[in-house]
Length: 149
Image 1 (cartoon, rainbow, N blue to C red):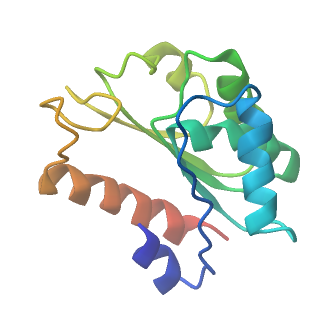
Image 2 (image 1 turned 90 degrees about the horizontal axis):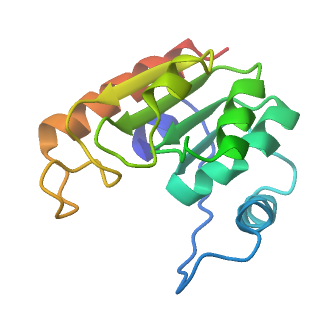
Image 3 (image 1 turned 60 degrees about the horizontal axis):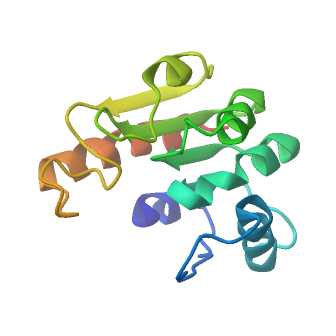
């Protein structure tokens, strides 16, 4: 995904972290990392799992986003995505316990729901994502990015 975004002219910056436990204020933690990385704002946000806590921030900034395995069982994350008027893509596995197909259908954005995959986008529970799945995600992301203004 990063290479595709760069090829399309996006300046890619990474907000990374390693955590022993979930921060007390996960949304504040994620948004502060995002602002440290891009204090002037972002033209696009691509986030996975905990990083999807930036959804409400993206909505306030009207920033397009690709949300990989967002925790749609958390009303704050789902509302942040639903409130964003900018184009968005949600990618999730149908067997992810943190995914909610009904909530995803009501978000008003593109959704790629991958049958039989868990939160790690794996069908085997070993965090290995098959090449065919990676290609499917990359293709959907590439199509999404190409349609952005």
